[in-house]
Length: 114
Ligand code: DGP
Image (cartoon, rainbow, N blue to C red):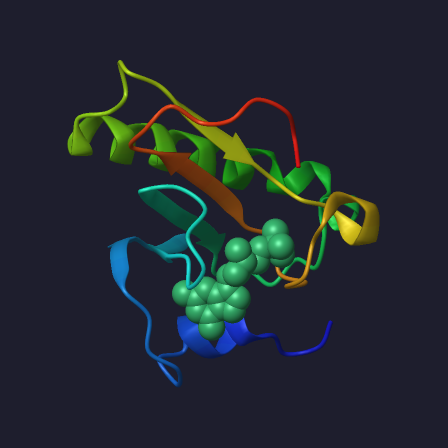
């Protein structure tokens, strides 16, 4: 796959506001937040879209979800609620082709998917 802006962020070549990182992933604030809290959980492994996942990535995807839920708990808005989203390809609104889990919260969110 081609090198994306997220690969450059992971390598430290472009700055980002990191909130979490471990051996499998990094998490940083979205440049164009759609909610008071908008964090992207990005695996270090470069996978372009959800369509490119394989069975060996099962644990990795689970870790992204668990990290997002843990972050919401740490920041104190887990009980109030939040939204997690993976966009896939054009119709899903994906613009960066390195999979990432959006975590949105910190206020009541509008309904719908757009
Ligand atoms: P998506 O549309 O699902 O592919 O989400 C890509 C998100 O990435 C979008 O909400 C904006 C964010 N984004 C794009 N470029 C950068 C960047 O250079 N830094 C940060 N922090 N976020 C970015």
